[in-house]
Length: 108
Image 1: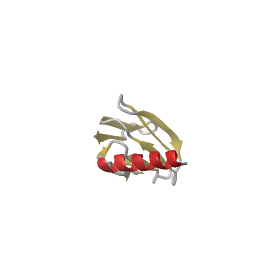
Image 2: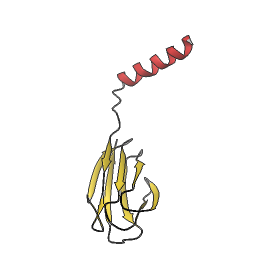
Image 3: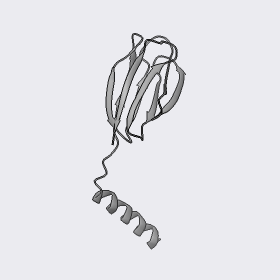
Image 4: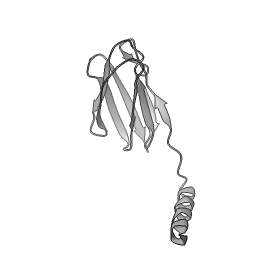
C-alpha cells in the first residue's frame, strides 16, 4: 500500500512540476449541411465533439495522416467525440455531404 501511495504522489508531483495542463473539449456542430466552424485550433490531448444539429444524417471522417477516423453515420441530436493527440493539421469532411469541409490545427 505504501508503494502505491508513493507512486501516486510521485506521479502527481511530476505532473505539477512539468506544468501539465488539463485537456479541453471543443464543439464543432453540423448545421445546414455545414460545419459550424471552418477552422479550429486546439492542443494535443484535447477532444472535439461533433453534434448533429441537422434533421438528417451526417458522417464525420478524416483521412489525414495526423489523425484518421470515421465516426460513422448518426442522426440529429446525437454527438460523437474524438481526441487528438498528435500535432499537425487534420482535414475533416462529411461522407454524406461532400461540400462539408473544415480543418483542425493541433498544437503541442
